Length: 448
Image 1: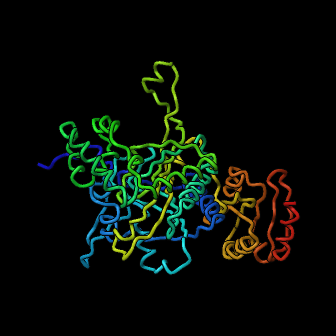
Image 2 (image 1 turned 120 degrees about the horizontal axis):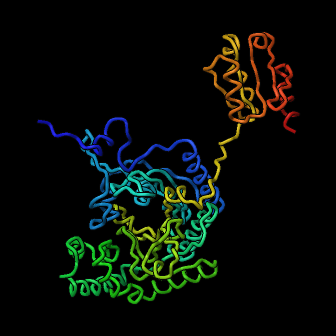
Image 3 (image 1 turned 60 degrees about the vertical axis):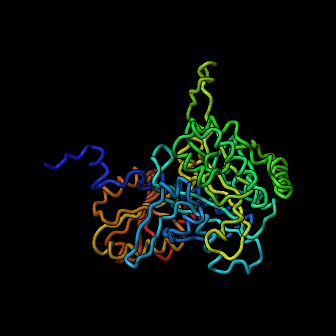
């Protein structure tokens, strides 16, 4: 006897998108497009150029770059084997593919640093929830080829400007430095010794991380581990002279730019390729945080929501197979959470033009000539709406009224034969018959 499928299984089969993925359309689509256009505009003013990498990459780019012991590699990557025997992965982030492109195309021969912005969907088999999807969108900006602290500051400034233009308020940064290969070894040894003293209290997942990558324990979501982490050694105390200087300069830049920051000693980020500067950007949420503190005061505080993150990844190039290290820093924005927030400005894309004309055609002769007339309007940058599949005058006029479009152009059989159209004012129902060669001039006068 076949097992009966439950309602959840039925919902995720057939004519529904995969769990954690959805269709973008109508206003939501334009919200994303408007954000991407604004982000690109700001990046271009600071000298960043566009790049687009494949959605599919060789699996090793991520397993070697992001690293084992991370949730992304161990649990969340979508992988496949091609007919040719290659192991590929849907990109779970943008940084490793960007570094692969930098190496593959010999960009180290260009004047350094090279600065890029890139955006698009990324994929992680995560638990879907509000603002978090298995296919989600990120906007990244990166500077490759310089280890100077001002590049860290530049990336943060540009990223913060994008968020502010999108409507984010009360932005703050949690920031830390996790050192480099000169000083991190001593810190990891101290951290490992600390966790070994508490190993009986560590959950199984973090005991495994202790063997593979102790830094990942600082990023643990396990409640027992979070309590242990409160007394863990902090990386800043173990920084070498060079890393201390670098971190101090980054903080000075933030202060000069009046960017609020908080040094978070447990911040390491969830990816193994980070070095030195790491940060997470928060804004106040529209969601109420009913914590014990807020309940005691009788007031609900706004909970901080992470909307961006990033840091320096000076050793990623060698990790993915490059011959030498490439100093680099980046800023990554989670776009889904932004466009779903109440504070988002609903940035309108440039391509979205409110139609000023509704085009109506009547009869086969008019329908035949309709596309030519619409092309005249397009070349003159006059946005229109139309329903060429309809034949009834009344139904087409009803649509124009519903859309509150001020003028309609009517092309009937007579007008098609005489190379003219009727332009009707929808407010007072007055109308004029205009020759096609005079139409643009007439519309220009109309809109003065």
